[in-house]
Length: 255
Image (cartoon, rainbow, N blue to C red; front, side, top):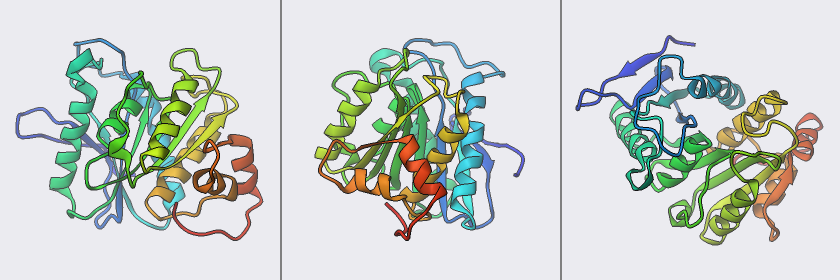
């Protein structure tokens, strides 16, 4: 992997950190880590939520092989969402603008966001280049908009024992987004709670698969395809999807 490279935005503060930038990428993945409801201080150099997203970057690249991907992270100016300010979403939009300046205009992008980063990813999914969102244990307060997901791929992963964000809100949001035109599915994770540490390999693998499939670079296993295309609630379990991956049947490429 190439060394991290920070791009500086015109206002002197970069919202984008490149983690892997091949010479001719076919698509881009933008990672958005978690944060707090409120917090106006800047993240520290340690930034544990940001470090937690690094394995997801590797997983997405593995799932998309042999197709080269540009992988980048959003750099937040503040730790929190901060109410109507929506700081994380504002920084996500800035990062998408910076990414647009670095790549071909038609390069598709998938957003992978955890917790507050999941909320930010969903908010900015209406950007014309965004092909889809993978939301990991997302923070979704009541009344979050869904219209921007029309025509996009949406994959939501949540452990129903999560005590920080509520899986029931994720499933309600998924249902609303599907009704609004999103091609969406949910994966009920058996372990991991909010930090996604237990059974981390399953979180990484399924996220990589979902992101690559949203970009049309990988095939969806049958349980996930059926959940996304079927008339039900759009949910399946991690165990079902992983079993299908380990014992594959002929499938199609893309969502």
